[in-house]
Length: 224
Image (cartoon, one colour):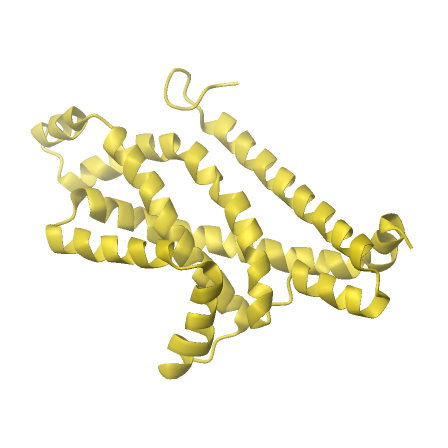
């Protein structure tokens, strides 16, 4: 049985795992963005205590391996506080919170790249700091951060495979189950590798189309 036979016979089952993997990745990217952007704003415009708290958060989630974080939350923190969450939700949350630590640094660098004179000019026109951030700083910095932010997709995609350790039935888990049924180790894992490559390529292609769509000629992202 070769790789093509494996894909024909077990393809639908593996595709179901790929769909779960995509769900993990999409959820983690969304959580990372929702938390990462405020963290970046806090690092740039927050008070000293806020910056210290955010620095500790970033240090914690960037300093621990993803597997340790998954075990820590799934078997430790959530059970201790009496919260019983599905493995998928814990996996997406941990991937997202870890992604937020990395995304916050991407957004922070983009925000700090905007000349300070723009904020000064906005304040001199009577705008509040939040109005200036929302209307002037963020629209520019989000465009500038997109190329760096897009690197989060393949990172989270590969990290999502580790979620099998807490019972998420994603692509790698289903691949292992197929191996246990067929005893065809190499062809099955090669099929899974092909799926991961296709997911990576498709996601990056889509992100690049978004980059081109929002590009402003001569500003940050090269127009195509």
